[in-house]
Image 1 (tube, rainbow, N blue to C red):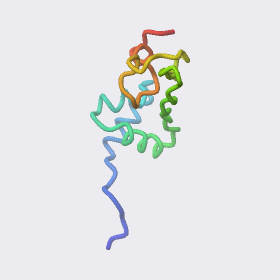
Image 2 (image 1 turned 135 degrees about the horizontal axis):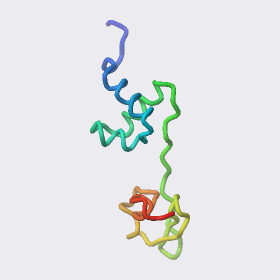
Image 3 (image 1 turned 180 degrees about the vertical axis):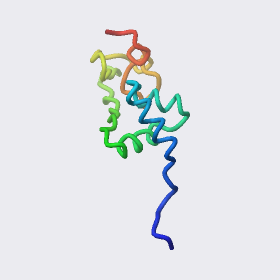
Image 4 (image 1 turned 90 degrees about the horizontal axis):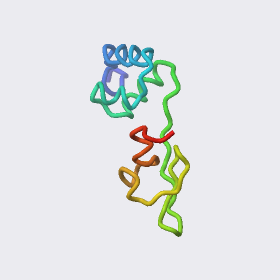
Length: 98
């Protein structure tokens, strides 16, 4: 056994992530650009010495059948969210709210 665990680090990928971070791109955007999972990008971001974005969990559903959006803070029906796993409503995800 050679003592290494997992796959070797893709240095070109890590360099590209570093360049995109310096250009002001967000982790989710970098993941889309490079066609990689957000968790993969977060791993490399931490390895580069940056603080990785922490994703928020959706709020619980209230008695009225609505939950609060983590970005705008408004209580909205479940149909206002892209899916049951999103913590932000569709309007906030698209950048249509202030």
